[in-house]
Length: 183
Ligand SMILES: [Fe+2]
Image (cartoon, rainbow, N blue to C red):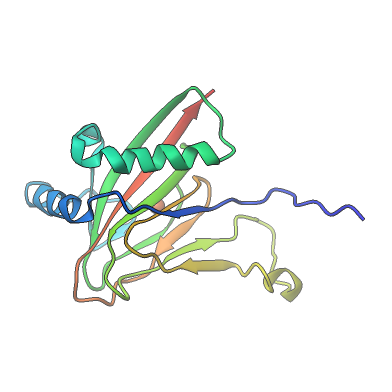
């Protein structure tokens, strides 16, 4: 018998140990002091683009981690464009369900992740009703990932996701990004 997987959704996850999370945390907290939050998916949190600073030495290994992950994806292209933004969630802050349609790949790098500061939850991209338990057993309608510091997660930009409310008294810091690949 031939068994095929039709339209699988890939998620890539790697832990990077050569990114200076302490320094990046400091940089982001300092940047926040002089910057108003923009309003996107964040519910009470702060987020702002850091695309203008991506070439600075402090972000070199972070950008390299993204490029390294892109190389193992199925996306092939000559020109890679990355847009990134920093996110800070305090207790009670969360990000509502959204996607990043318009880009090819999206992802998150976890700079500072206190315990119980929020899971990233992905939602089944199939638009038909897959409530039948036979479909649900291995692939429930939503799947949560509890991240750790140094994790980089990358997924197709069409995949809907959210971040659950932080229950931690400590600050959660992440950098999210979009990747466009032109062939
Ligand atoms: Fe997102």
